[in-house]
Length: 245
View 1 (cartoon, rainbow, N blue to C red):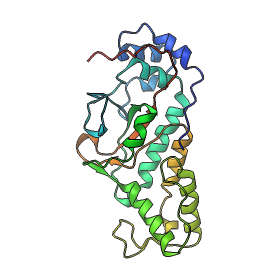
View 2 (cartoon, rainbow, N blue to C red):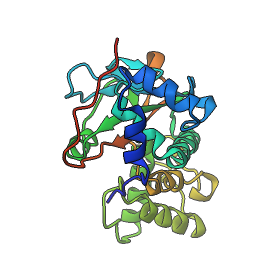
View 3 (cartoon, one colour):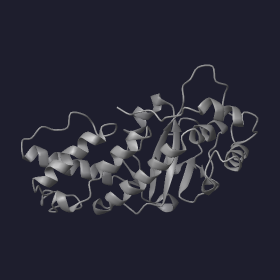
View 4 (cartoon, rainbow, N blue to C red):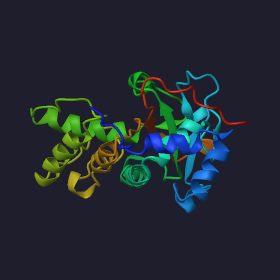
């Protein structure tokens, strides 16, 4: 299961931006006050989904911007700068590990803010315009375990990547090879010669953030790695202020 981000100063950060009229103003104030790193003022390697309806299932085709859409989103990220930075670094490493499976190179982290209840269906949608390199690696490992009549992972991948990484390392140490007849990239390649894609995924999940099964593969979303920021569900919060378009 997924952890939760560490946000011990969230109430303080919310208070800091409570009077901001837009997300852009909140982001600027947080950077100027040193609550966000100066390099985050507008980083081309970070983009944010701006949902049109609030019920988006396909973030690749939603509008996106260089800054969060809501003031509340600014506070959430500022409350966990180390965790956000670690998640983005892990996303970059994940993309690199998926290159042997045909994934495009990393271009940016695409942050998507979701309440916990929406994450479950977001991870099971099949979308056009994306590359499922991570699932190719999953299939290669599962097929190898089945061929050996070995136990399969006890859990699905997302939320349990550390367990899958341990199985990958076991196969690498045993000299296992991706089945040569598999209709997969890297068919016939020893696991030991391939980077373990589940290790950076586990590092990402340890921060309390999440990703999905795909990387953007077309247009200006090519190389986008989705990062899910869970919304805080504390009771009694005012409705978040939307950014001015």
